[in-house]
Every structure is written in C-alpha cells, then in structure tokens.
Length: 139
Image 1 (cartoon, rainbow, N blue to C red):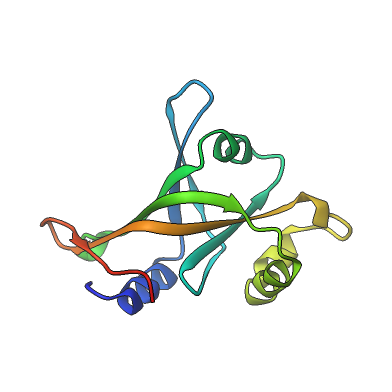
Image 2: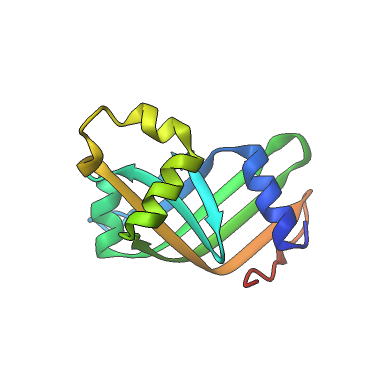
C-alpha cells in the first residue's frame, strides 16, 4: 500500500478502525470506530457527545487511528490532531453518506451527534511483516 487511494480503499474494506486517545489519568485508551468518511484531506468519524472519548479528545487532541486486516497482516495508521466539525453542511453530508448514523440516532437526538475531523500529520501503511511505508496524504 503506497498511495492515498490505496489507503482509502483499505479503510473502507476493513470497516472498523481503532482510535487511541489519552485518558484523564494519562493512560492510553483504545476503542473501535466504525462510521468514518474521507472528505478532501480529512478523515471524519462520528460519536455521541456524552462518551469519554469526547472529553479525552478535548483535553488531548492528538490521536491515532489504526486499521488491520489479519489475513495478509496489512495495517494503516493515521495520526494527527482531532477537532470537532461544527459545519452543518459537512455534518449533513456525513449523515447522508453514513445511513447507519441515522439509525443510531433516535428521532430528536441530533444534539447527541459529534462529528470529529482528523487531518492526518502522518499516514503509515504496510502489507506483511515489514517496516511501515509513509504515505503521502495531502492531495
């Protein structure tokens, strides 16, 4: 995996990534994230506003998301600063592109929706048991 397009295809195929943040005790916290989309140079994912990860990201915006496929030992890692995306047009587009989000949000619960934006500073990928390749991300 050497190109941005290959990375995007990989994360769409794998479906679930693992988001690593720093907890209030400065210990790492890792959890799966499943609804994400790439627009431009940013990766967007959704969560509920009341989750611990929102508090963790607010305190320490640097994070990493990793995806893995076991059958060929392929992996992608993206790291950078996360920010809350508050543009209503981007939020509406994300919900339209990810119908499972609408299923997860009960009627009238839009205030629970939080859309985060990761602008990757480093993207690394590998297939097999060898060193990671750094992938050029900016279009």
